[in-house]
Image 1 (cartoon, rainbow, N blue to C red):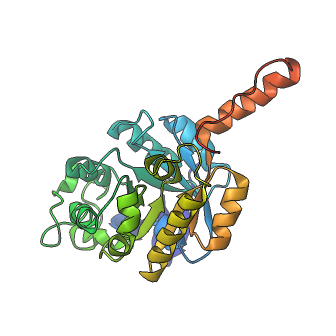
Image 2 (cartoon, rainbow, N blue to C red; image 1 turned 45 degrees about the horizontal axis):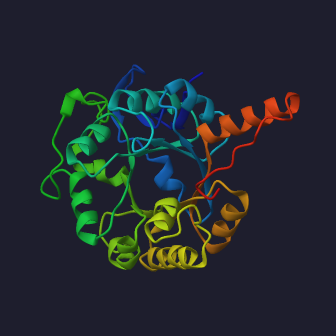
Length: 294
């Protein structure tokens, strides 16, 4: 059940929100919620899982298993803004920090996802520093950007209960941009140096496919591009992440210095467990192999 724990004298914390208590012990205001994912990027590897089923029920199950973070996937999974909202609400009482991936660079969608309370966004297919800067601006209120003001309509402000939200919202936002093309790798230094970009996440499958090594992210050329992107990100003082469902890959990337690594995909985990289960009773059942290189 949801946890309500003491945060500091005069405050209570629930679901990331800090409640200021008056003399009558009734909540009178809410402080800006802390971003647990952003705060966890301390140099130690954090292990996450893709959440692709598109339901709060399935994502809440993942949140009970010990992953440091969960990627609510709006790019390839059948998610909409309401289904993302349901998953954010479902995982709020748990320690697994939610990351929301958008389907594209649409500022209107970014605004909606921020308004429903997403604090960490992952944006796919970022190829240039100019694109990265535009994405930063989409997450900031004027004069630092062009995010529209939803005020009392939005969960992010707890319906206008969070003090100083407009002035301080950016402090707890975390923008992760994906480098997953040759152009992105070539521009990794400039992308990483973009003010407001907090992290770069390498997409090894799209990257390997785009450079002519489909299904083989471990090709030496692809590995060199991944390492270059990591080094460029670290040189800019930013965090680096990657998808690595294969254990050997995940361990190698952790040794290289990646800060957050997705080591599972919920749909793949379910299918793998189902295949292995039926094979114990029907040994003749074919065992499919992934075409994605993991």
